[in-house]
Length: 148
Image (cartoon, rainbow, N blue to C red; front, side, top):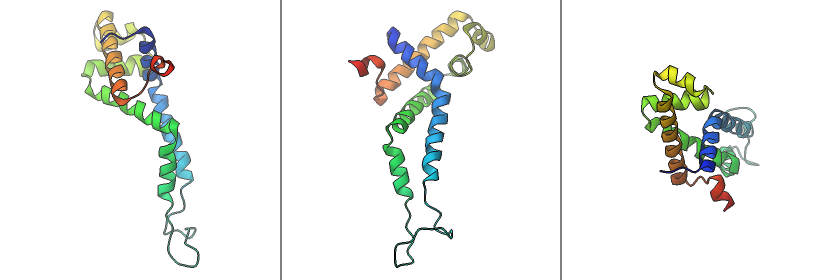
């Protein structure tokens, strides 16, 4: 698959931001978790007025989290990147980790995987093409698609 320059830039930006995206998902989940009501067995539990029945509002917090557009997009992007990561062979996975997530240069990645720089470049192109294909399959728009 031929990948355009802007598409490649977006995919590579998403790959570099993957660790931050995972942390942001955890932050959002923690924020919504703080809004959860007390456990039904705690002294602070919420009961229905005039009865001893316990109200469980957990589903409302989960529903609000799932309606959050930032959370939904982050989950889709992270899931797409992870699907590609686990479908790659070991060498491609190592290139993805070292180049995008650890920020190493091409020469350093080539030294780590005991391959030439050209091999690392080919692997990088393969990763970008696979991630772009996965984004399209998951309905995650690129910059050009969103603008046009």
